[in-house]
Every structure is written in structure tokens, then in C-alpha cells.
Image (cartoon, rainbow, N blue to C red; front, side):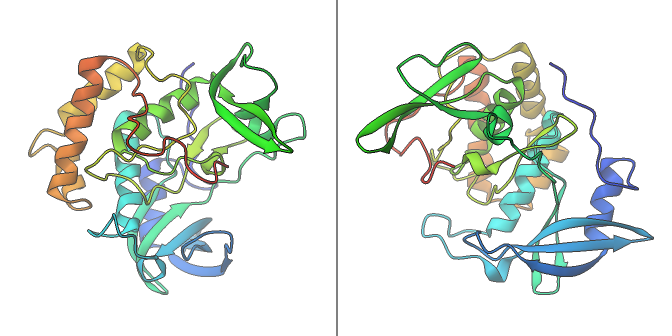
Length: 282
């Protein structure tokens, strides 16, 4: 399944123009997204007669994390976008680092997610099934408590878009891939958001997308990883850009993870040294 054509925003014809809009446009705060653990502001950005909705996360609104003492979450969000773009998959909405009404922060394209119906929650990407078999078109993740002493099998779709995202998460060492961070768009694209807890030098991978654990990587994934390996060589543009956003130790760990994936040729499996699934999972 090829990646759907990207449709950046009304009045914007390519990703470069979208990044320019987000980086240079005038930000107007519309309101706060209160469900978020850190300060997340819904904004409108306008530049040269073009406007779009976006998300602004000021660094000042971040809650300190004991295990992420270096840099800030905003830089990690931008780094995740940079790596996503380098794969060619476009799995993360356009994201820039810039000054805003409350200081420096990350600004990201707002994605209007497809509204789920009762029979297809989260665009049919996640589900709970009775019994021990996931069923055709689904991949098992883990048993989940559903109340009154009952358990159900947590599953995700055997979807190539999710499979790409699972590879990206392995590269960026995503410590928080929840179901609510998956945004299926009406145009058929799938986006992942909330990438502040990424790029740790130690294994922190926590995700709902374990369905392919231990399985061979696709040819598409191996090609994307080979491209990342080349781009991460010292002095290469991707490595140079990431060095502005994460530490040298974290950058070395990215190289190691890409090399490991290429060497093993398989999707990673839970290490057993860290909770494999984030909480809450959705």
C-alpha cells in the first residue's frame, strides 16, 4: 500500500510552504487543550494571506521529567518530525521550533481526524475482542482488563500505515505510543502525534503496536532504514539537523537502533526491562 499523497493545508501546495507558514506566520491563540498533561494551545497561524490551525506547545508549559533531563520535549517533537520526513513516509504532521506568545515552543500542523463511528473506533485501528484469537486483519497485543473480572484481547489492525509507524517508533525510541496519539485523516493518511518522550539513549519503547514483534521487516522498511543510516552518518544533513535538537549521546543511540534494525531484519520485541505498553493505553 503506497503512502497517500500529502495534502498539507488549504492554500498550501507543499511541505516546505507548510513549514514556512508554521515558522513565520502570526500565531493567534484560540484556546487550551485541557486533556493534555503539558500546556497545549490550539492556535491559528497566518502568513502572506494563508492561514491554518495548529498546535503550539511552549517549553515553559512543560512538566519536567526526571528521566529526560537534557533539552526539552519541544525539540524532541521536532526531531521526530525530521526523522519521519527522512523516511519518506510523512507520519508526523509538519512541526517547527519557533518563538510564540509564551516563548519558544513547538508548532505543529493541526490534523482534523476522521470521526469514528460506533462500529469502527479510532478508524478501525484498535479493538478489543473476546477469546484468544485476534481474527483476520488484526494483530494481537495483550490481554486487557475490561471490568467485572473479565478480560479481552487488545488488538490493532494489520495495517501498513501502522506498520510504518511501528518502525518509526522503534527508531525514535517512542516511550508513549497510545491509541489517542493515532490520527486517521479523512484523506486516508495516518498521523502520529505527541512525540515529546522520544530519543532517550536507553530503551524506552512503549507502544500499542507490538503486533509485528519479531516478524521480518518489509522491503519498504528496510529501504527506509538504509536511507536513515546514510543520513545519520557524521556530517550528513540529517545528522547535522538532529544534533541541533538532541544530545550527541542520543544521536549515537539513534544510529545504533537503525543499525540494529537493519542487522536483525526484524521488528523489535519488548525488552522485559521496561513496561511495554503505555498507561493509559488509549
